[in-house]
Image (tube, rainbow, N blue to C red; front, top):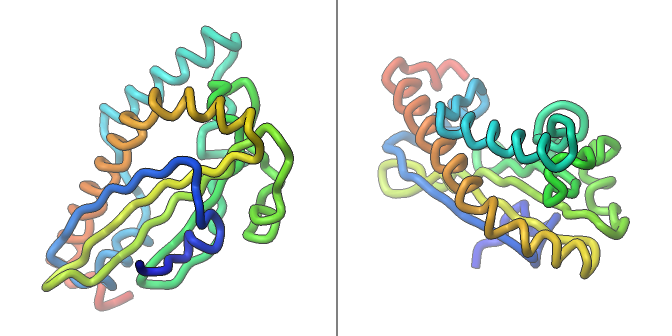
Length: 192
């Protein structure tokens, strides 16, 4: 088995999901497309996020406070260009926005040290692996909970969110592959 950067942060996750796509460009071009940013998820993903927001409002009387943007957003834990990047987040997502992500988790040491009961620690990993004449882009989501109660809560939440989270990851991969093909067609990666 290949060791990944994600293994340093969550080597034995309670929950995990992997998605992948192969694109006919070198890893350096796919990495450059990722670094260029501006990922678009499309209407289905926005609709899924909005639906979760409606659940948060119905359950908690307010908007979500645990999306992976803003305070407590994903923070880069490690990267090895052009092979892999790992981002992390700590929260209680099963509470549908009733509590915010832990904003003080601002780097790898705090992520590794965090052990307060009642939380989940998540990593999102993107790997860019040579594959024949192209690149296999892999997204992996891993979650480890800090105690048995949070593991049970996440265990109830995971089957609800996993299909939708997976769909968002698939859309992310398709968008990234399209951007990598466009970048390769314009020769833009050579300048990076």
